[in-house]
Amino acid sequence: MRWDPSGEGGDANPWERYNRRIVICFDKDDPKYTVHQATALARANPGPGVLDYLPVYGQADPLNPVATVRNIRPSVNATGEVWRVEVTYSNEPEDEREKERRANPHWNPLDEEPKVVTITSEEMVPWEEDEEGNPPINSASDKINPPPTKIVTRYAYQVTQNYAELPANYYPAEDESEINSGAVQLYSIDKTFGAGELRYAPGNVSDWKTHDLLDVTDAKITVRYKTATVTYHWRPKTWDQRILNAGVNQLVNGEKEGITVPADDGTPMAVGDPQFLDANGAWIPNGTAADATYKTFKPYPRVSFAGRPGVV
Image (cartoon, rainbow, N blue to C red; front, side, top):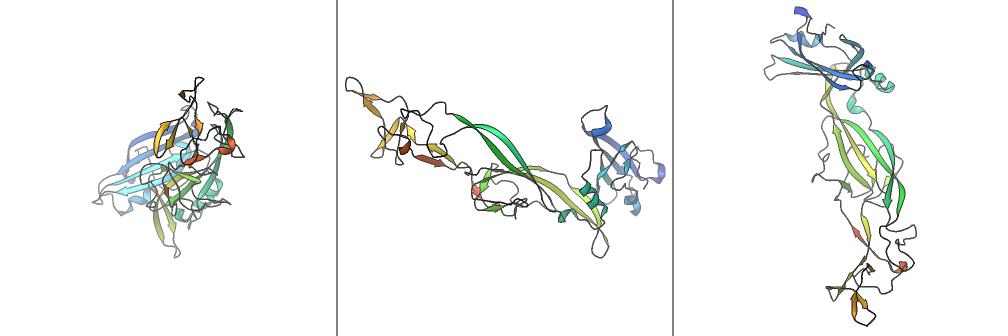
């Protein structure tokens, strides 16, 4: 292959490099972690053999031999007269399994199974009830403010999958987080997630990639695809929010009125701290933890996750 991104290939090379840019460079003095692209144009009417001059996957970069070709994106204009190619080089360590797949002439990136990575983190959060369902109140049944906190472990599942065309429901309809309306099974995760437990967050979508392969008849074909990454955040108690029914007002015959208690002289006095309420908004005098009720809020729309990355 006579690919020469330096632009010095002469008449034997129809490609003429016109731009070279650094995409990622963690340390300009250390070539170990460099990623760059060479963008080139073929001269007008270059002839049918123009693609024969492209580099191949794994070929070293003439200007930086420690980097090799990782992606090739040729394209041609509407008239077929001018070709453009973008070649991405990198010398970041490559997954051995990925190298084996690339070496297989029949490997098709669209046949790849989803890649699922489990991510864990710890978070300090306020709690609304303990393991027995009791709210955080003191011995006088007053709600503790600010509420006590606890450490929880959060789980998330990052899924990467290749697509010839993104699923129609890849992006949330309302540009906000969505949770699952029914049970969900994720690829390679030995667990079924109940309704409302997973929050969906779309991530990065790559530019178009191309890959040449041999089909079942050993004919050469080119597949065009994108790589999409999404994250599913898991909450075992669902993403609905349970809030303690407590306040300084109550409902009486459907009307809101302040909760009062007798003052020392017997006159009604408004309470200063939130009081326990029942499910109908009525005040529970001298309420204790056993009387606590909760109101459930659903801040996220529930939708089907069928067809989204990693969902089986």
